[in-house]
Length: 511
Ligand code: UDP
Image (cartoon, rainbow, N blue to C red; front, side, top):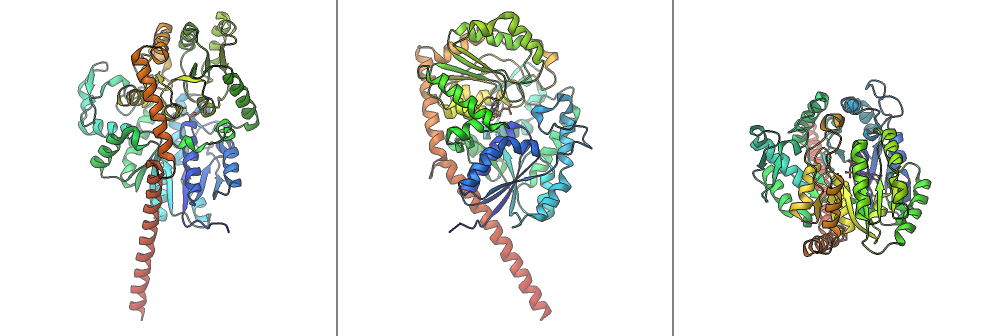
C-alpha cells in the first residue's frame, strides 16, 4: 500500500546551479523520508533537474516540480535567461534580484492551488518573496543555506564586532568570537563587508535579505556535524536559532546515472560524456588524476586561464580541466590554440568545455586531488571524494570556505589567491592573480610524498568516511533531518490544537 505523506513542504530554490542543485538534492532526501515535496521553479531551470526528479518519482518518492514563468518582462532580463549563470552580463545581477521579487504573486497563486496545502516553505535565503508568502499563509519559512555554519558564524561575528571597519583593505585581522583564530584581510571578505563598487543594487538586495532573516523558523545548512561541530554549536548559541545540518546533500546521488545527469539539461548527452570520462579515468592509477573546475559562474580572465593550464602542464600529472564560462570565451580559446597546450597534453589532459558531470568524476577512484574555486557545493563534493583540495577562491564567501579546508580541517592547500574578485569586476583587478609556478607547487604539496602531504591526504580520506556516515541511517545529518520533520510536525499539531481550541471557544460563546 502506498504511504500517504502527512506533511507537504514547498521548496523554492534560487535560480543558479550552486543554489538549485543542492536544494533539489535536499528535496529528494526529504521525499525519501515520506514528506511530500513540491519544488517550484521556472522551465529552463526545471530542465536541468527533471531527469533526476523523474527517476526519484519512479522510485516512489512523493516529489513533483511545479513551473512558474520567469518574469523576464518587467525585470529587464532578456528572454531565454532564467539563471544567474546564463545572464548575458553580470551588471544584470540587480535586475535578477528584481525578477525574484516579481515572483510574489505567482507564488501566492501557486500556494493557493496546491493540494494538500503546504505546511511549510523552504526557500533559498535570496528568494525574498517567500518570506511574504509564508507570512500571508501563516506557515513557517525555513531558510536553506547553501553554505556552512562557519560562514553563518563568521558573518554574525563580523556584523556584531564591526572589526572589519577599522582596517585597511590589505591589513590582516582576527575575527572575534570564532572557535579558532581565523585571520582575514578585508579584501578577502564577501560583498557584505567588502562591497562591490559597481553594483549598488546588489548591496541593497543583500541588506534586504539580512533584514528578512529575523522571522524565519530556522535554517537548514548543507553541512555536517563532524565537519564543523564547534561552529554549529557556537552559531546556535549566539543566535538562539534552530539549525539543522543535513548534508552533504550531493551524497543523495547514489547511482552513476544520477551523478552523470545532475544539473545538465541535455541528460542523454551527459550520460554519454559520463561514460567517456569514466572510461578514461579507469585507465589511470588510483588517486593520480587532478580534477580542476572553478564552478558554474567562473569568469577568470583568459590570461589567468592560460597560467592555470600551463601550471597543470608543468605538474606532468594527468588532469581533467573544466573550462566553463562564456566570459571572454573566444579570447581564451584563441590564447589556448596559439599556445598549443591542448595538443601538448593530449593523452594525459582532458579539457571539458561544457557542463562537467562533477559529482560523477569526483567519485572515481583515479581522482587524486581537486583544484576548486571553493564554492561551498564543490568544497563539500571534494570532501566527499576523500582527496585533498587545492584551493583557488574567486568571489563571494569562497575565501571562508578555503579557511575551512586549509585551517579548520586541514585537508587542502592554498594555491595563493590573495583577494576576492567580485563578479563583473574582473577587469579591475589585473589579468593574473596566480602564476603557473604556484599551481605546480600547490599540486606537489597535495600529491607529493613528504610527510605533510601524506597527512593532508589521510585527513581527507577520513573526513570523507565521516561525511558518508553522517547521511547514513542513524548518522548526524540523517538525525537532523528527522528533527526537522519532527519540528514541523509538532508545529502543525500545535496549530491544529490552537484552531480546535478557538473553534471550541467560539462554539461555547455561540451556545
Ligand atoms: N557543477 C557541475 N558541473 C560543472 C560546473 C558545476 O556539476 O561543470 C556543479 C557542482 O558539482 C556544484 C555546483 O554545480 O554542485 C556549483 O556550485 P558551487 O557552490 O561549487 O559553485 P558556484 O557554481 O555556485 O560558484
